[in-house]
Length: 326
Image (cartoon, rainbow, N blue to C red; front, side, top):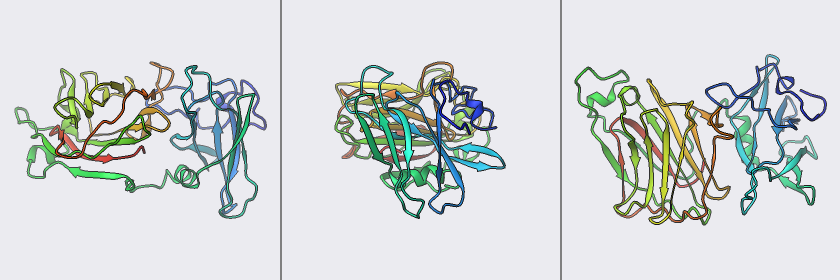
């Protein structure tokens, strides 16, 4: 780790982990002019753990690191701070970050300091978020808070139950459905998450046009849908019946042959949309500056509930739907 947060410090100075990246293809995470890493100690005060941060960002992401055989192994990023209303200048946001830990005692709070050169602020970091960051590498159970639906493809479909590609000429697994959750108003701060497990037959079947994997929209187009195109990009579509918005996964992380795990996350508080593909948060790769998109304040209540149904492509093995962001 660098002894100081010197401007222009190379990401390779942080650790011998070949420059940690959050993408399926190569992309430096430490390309900002002021990469800074600050050591945090566990509440048991036994092992050093690390959290790097970058300035002039909104929302503000944190990652947690743990030492393993002389290398810092980084977690997936989580949103820690955000500015409301979102500023239009992409360079605005919290900056000059540092951490304050008043005590090494168990349960002691950890604070993050930041400033915009006019106002200095001190934020207590959420304990649950921190514990989640530091325990990502051992977490094996799916989230349950906010889980509104956890449904699997009907087991009677033999073609769908195999993990191998279906025989030539075999019919595609039949579509299925489940009641749509009540999502709420995104413009009022509600969030949602759709988690899809795609089986090998799903990924190996040729897609020649955009295909809905999960479609929870009503007859007027209000609701949420996740689709895949012929290039393997996954897109989430949000609509309140009047205003709509789409965001796609990184083009360099296609849902190609083989089984895949895709999560579309919509955060109405931090106002962002993101994709996690096979456990990796999309960061934009070489195609765009970042992998997340700004959620439009115009998109309001995306409905759900009542008699609305989520129609699921038969090649999707499982769907978990949450009425919050993950």
